Image (cartoon, rainbow, N blue to C red; front, top):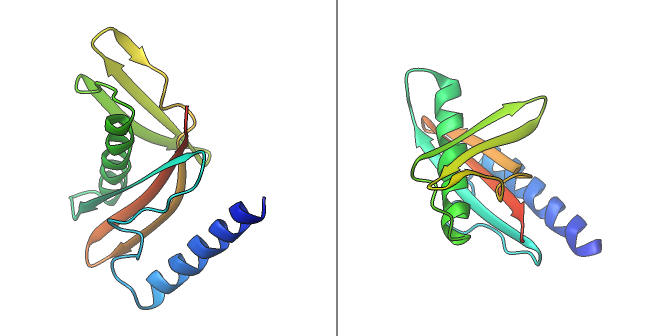
Length: 124
């Protein structure tokens, strides 16, 4: 519990500092490591609709986690958000995949026309 609180505080401070001085955020390219969790970051440059940049960044981060789990999501992978919760639609060769259910958005930032996200998923 204390380690989790320390990680949350560290990420909050990192996010605050990222908004003040650091661009891109410090976790980009070096997502945190925590027992029981898989972390990944994603990014997307400027696109015509701001919501699309965020959605693409989320999908890219989710693809990293899918790859780490050995999931074949080449047929379809999309991430959407509703009421503060992430929903993953993943389709593999044999049908829908549910191993990515429970994906969480940990942090996000936007700087220099690039949207960055940090996501995590409980390890199976």
